Length: 83
Length: 231
Image 1 (spheres, each protein chain N blue to C red):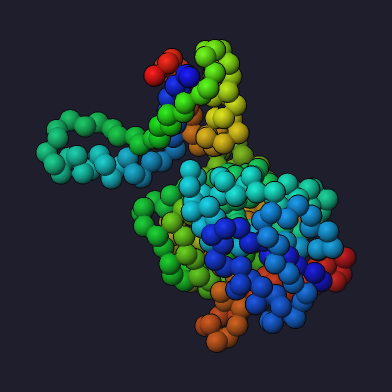
Image 2 (tube, helix red, strand yellow):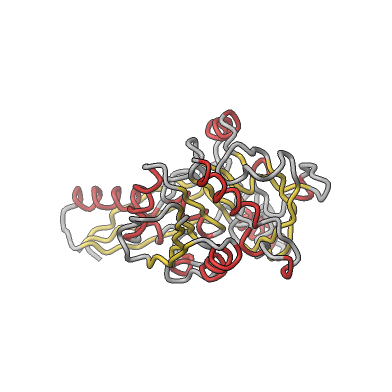
């Protein structure tokens, strides 16, 4: 098994109202100096393959077809190996 | 004219659309289950509002993979009329049949109220019986209606007059304070370049009878029937 962790974030320049609310909530809890908050999504996907290359290929394809909307989102992922 | 109303798991405006088409417009109409893979015999297809697949992942993202959506894409490609209302609009953008994306409302709140939208172009199957610049009173009910598109594709929309409806004041002025959800350029509805696919967040089927307070939505359906008759 291979574990992949996929991080999906809104692209720069796309308004993130949820991030804004979290930032203001942190300020109201007296956390000083929070310059910016952006909220995103994390997917943990367990793949049956042991081959890192194959895992990368599958994850790219999953992002392209379903997990990410490229109009507003960008992604990054790490292959963590056998859990 | 024969209409089809697609029913996804979680659609909840399908009955309203069916009622308006059948009982108000007096046109032929049938429900199309999302597992169906043929739209043969239909002249227009409606993707109704609702919360298909619970809005999981992103609104409209999962419905896009329903078997019926390949048929809808093919139907649209062949010039068939496709109307996406609310969740239907979200599905059409996820499926790539319309550009842009519907994001969470700027306020983060679900908005359920009547708004005013302005008809920006009447040269379409959907709006030919409206007056250009006409302000319509129409209900919205959505959490994710904040239309976003990058500047390059936005200018394409503008250049090709694909923006059909924009949120406005009751007098028909485009002012940011009358934009309910933060949509770029106050966009409430767009069509594709060929003008046979329309996506809009407001609900014309909820204002098609005087008993519901407004009949201005019915003109959209009448436009389609008229366009089809003259074709």
